[in-house]
Image (tube, rainbow, N blue to C red):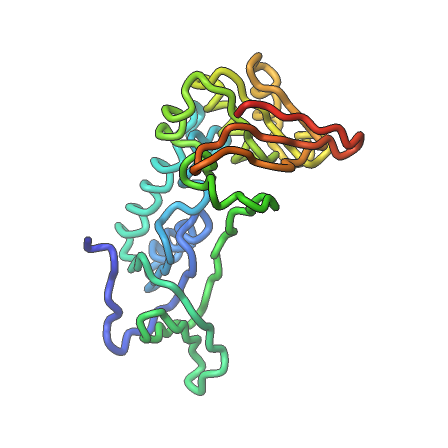
Length: 246
């Protein structure tokens, strides 16, 4: 597909970046624009968690908002314009800090070693999974980890449970609210304000079809053949459990 850039023989990079999310790509842009040789490695795709966001409104220069994929695609192209070598998909398996030549070494999954004078680790985060025994049964069919137009169409007119209280959860809730009948926003903490930007909290509270359930945890998912039928959650303070057809 032309995405995997082969390492040049005997190449020593000024900067090697692990991860191509917002932090990794901005590092690549700023370093490459100053004339440094830059290599960027990512095991999956560029964009990171931001790339899966339906809409980002608090990023400098985009007052009306922009989709995460569009924003990250611009950063990806910008890094390439300045000459950064972006290698996707490549998994970094080890970091060698004890080389005798004073360089750092990144061992890649194809057996090669990428050498660089400096390393920036911007490997991001993995999505946390619910502590529910049969979660895997519903992943990919009824349980998703992002809210794109595909998920919006799948859930159109239905009730959706959305777990989380960070900015990604807030953006997803606002986006889904315009497509589904109701969004139940479940957060373990006592308030959204502690972990979510203020503009998103206000946007969520202004949506009549978003129900905010703080201090709440998912207890069980029920259904058959991968099709979710009901979700049961528990109020952490009172212990009261609620089952809804979701």
